[in-house]
Image 1 (cartoon, rainbow, N blue to C red):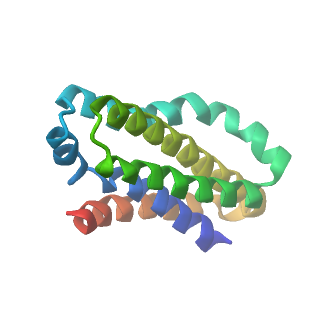
Image 2: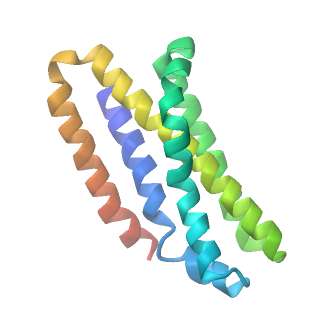
Image 3: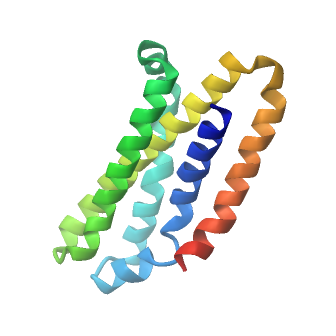
Length: 151
């Protein structure tokens, strides 16, 4: 179980930065301004900030394992939606789809991270310090590997 939420957080954090090398040129080529590209990137952390405080209530209702699996599944759908922008030509549709997709990704990321912390605190209270350290290691690994893999 520990490996699952460490991997989930690595995927969540890695995919946040994964798009950085290649998305801005693609969006600029389609006519999206640099300011709007910045907004698209900002949509993800904005969604995390807005939803994180409320997620704990839903984890308790569904159970952490189911909640984590659902968040990972929906995260994949959100990235699939984001991938569709490459085939779009209408700038307004590209912007709206990108912002909605990135916000959806942010909500799913907040769910993944909050659930992981909840699992750690509930099932491994005597190992919480070590697991938080491992979680931060996974974030660092994700931030190193993702841009390299997508460049």
